[in-house]
Image 1 (cartoon, rainbow, N blue to C red):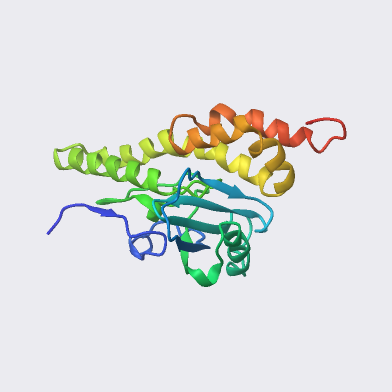
Image 2: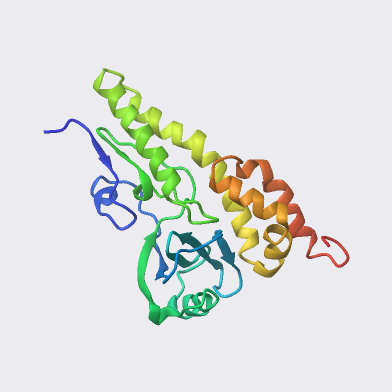
Length: 240
């Protein structure tokens, strides 16, 4: 029998509840997997703002196709996920009828909370550490899984504070930056047209978003500037 448990069963998994952790809101995202006849050339990730209320759609190219997604980021889950995906998919030369549609649960980060108990830790989407601005979950899942394994190793070697240290590590190295991501999201998704114009459409902003997804730049580095730009756009004659 194992001495410790790493719960990593995803956003809809039961382990967090069984272990007595704070329940988190689970929202539903729509996913459309499209396969193309020819390999995708010069593909780049892209986002669409305006088709999904309080959220966005995104596209990540693959070797021979695209992975499209749609979700809200504030408020309730979207009631209709297929319509915006069908509209977005048409811009790639295909529609929903040519793609494989399914839904995926999301637990977006919504503040720090304990990720450990006496002999268990949460990692990945189970721990609700998905980026609240882009829904990125792979990078934090890999990072938290690595940190969880290191914490368990320390615990097995007699460190009584190892699991608490894991929670603190995630707070400091992920949660601290997600606070800024959440602040941007609350402003951005309430006024997506303005947010897109001043925060995404600029070539430098698109580059910054790519750097954030690659872990090269943090939200803390850009948050104040982005929020200020969006805020001044409400004032006539400013933010242009």
